[in-house]
Image: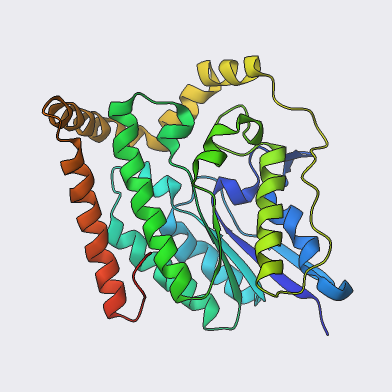
Length: 284
């Protein structure tokens, strides 16, 4: 039997940002890769993820490269950057994820997916800014849940409060896992694979080789490099986000913030309904 091939697709999370190794990054996928060789089988790992990628980048650039690699296992973790753009469109995200997941599973690859915390909560933004971003991330997560079920993916729920509140998991930028976070991410996937009956080797250690990031370093990053990072990632969103914040205040003053939540949920339900019509199960 030849080597098992593992391809990782996505954005900076999968590229490994927050877990430095030499002049680059390592990350959760690289930590998980050796453990995929159950029974001593060799593993060939390729990381196609690129920082800043959106679902369109994964579909149009990374997927063709990964298909040529012919993976046995493929991870697709993406969507946060879509929520940070003015062009965010739930229907487009759903269509692109559906295409990517289907491309690999139709070729017999085992699919790994994950839902993620919303960036507003991670950055500690004021509520009027955080809530619109949270709605977007909830929408993406709902799509990932439904499509993961449709394609039989091994799915990691990483959006719950434990991931957000445990600061020891995160790097100085508060948006990417630190070394411990990447290790825990990899270990959780290993556990899910084992529970699913997939032959895996020894799990990756969750104990970091480097010490935790001092709080002062986190504050300094946010005050200096962090500002530039946020501007680069969501600069085109800022005018729209300010408009959304005004709407948030207007509805909040009337005690009607639930109206905005309901409106967003109906849009997602409509998209998921179209997926059901195409053969995908409803979320839940």
